[in-house]
Length: 196
Image (tube, rainbow, N blue to C red; front, side, top):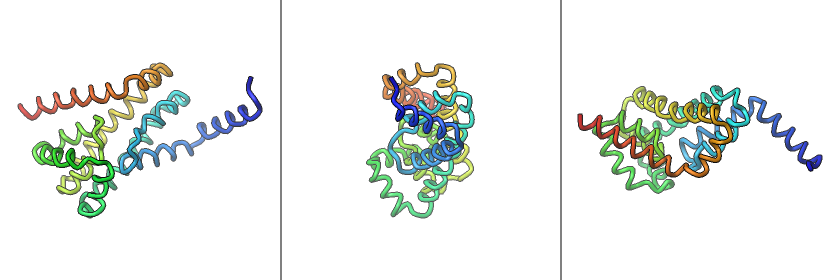
């Protein structure tokens, strides 16, 4: 049986979810995730998308916009502050070895490498810093981010819209395997592109 406190909490939560403040929160979380938060945004997006199925496109668009602003900040850090803030971010995420390996692949196949890192579980910060520190053309970097992160956010929103709460249970059980599966598929596509 629900207590009056439960009813008040549910009303408060419904008010927040129905307001545009939730969109600002998603924008900010997406921005922070793309720069410094090592927590996947999906942990917030999936339950939100289940509750707000009629706003799936708006929520995905806001998440993408936040990510693009964060990606621009990360790219700028790579351009102007790589030796200080960029190195700190690499150390913060503990991806020094991955960054060195990524830089080599990036110098040979920049756009395809950015697409791969944007879709897979590899931290996107690696791609942002590499693109900025190598003065990779900003518009191409942004295009790769739009495509990769658009697939991620709009694809997730469509899945949640179609499958509802079943996707939450599935995500909790298979998120790591899915990430590795996408990584393997991405590497296979990358190799096909590189070898041809």
